[in-house]
Image 1 (cartoon, rainbow, N blue to C red):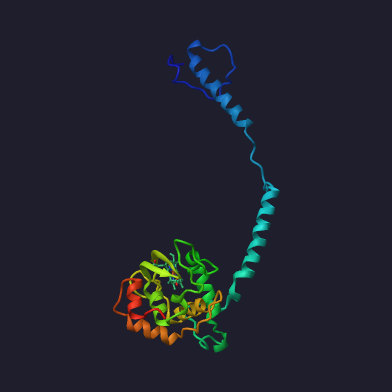
Image 2 (image 1 turned 90 degrees about the vertical axis):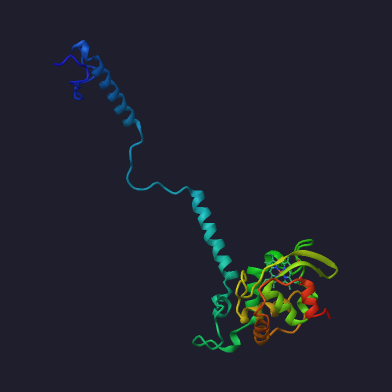
Length: 236
Ligand code: HEC
């Protein structure tokens, strides 16, 4: 047996064994440590088979979530209609769809809620001081080319709407740089929708009108200012 305490470490020796060389004390201490660790390890929770039950409140939580999702889908699915969801949709283009299925108001309602309501509000009244109203606004119910220009390029700088001056930025939905690139069909739908909602009673804006205005302003990239628009299309 070597004199060096570490050279003959015997892990299998029982730690409480007595009567061995006092030089082995270090090894003995190692063994004790080992044993205590084993004990500690045994005291940990045993791994179990099978699975533990879900806390009951989670069950209710998920149940409630599924229920809410169902109601949400029922209210907001737009009946999963292609003319509402697909911007490329053409009447008669898809199997048994008929021309009558295209409804610019339905499509416009969806576009409005997803794109404009955050600023102009669901009731079309805007936010005082920040976002001008669309309800009763002459910019909406007046000259259709002026309105289409706003939608295709956006607006910046001061604009007076029904006696109040706003000074913000209205995003572009046209095909200029930074524009959202909406089709003639969707611009026709949103323009028609805002002209006929919240008590507005202006005639629809046709897809052809949108196409003509788009061609006319093809060279223009920047957003409009209100005075520029009023110069081209004076307020009625
Ligand atoms: C990020 C906020 C924002 C979004 C989104 C937005 N607008 Fe605007 N809109 C404005 C602001 C701000 C003005 C005023 C611009 C200015 O001060 O020059 C404005 C002005 C207008 C105007 C002319 C003024 C009026 O009140 O009649 C029309 C029309 C309009 N927006 C329609 C729309 C439509 C339609 C949509 C969705 C397709 C839309 N806006 C999305 C902020 C927004």
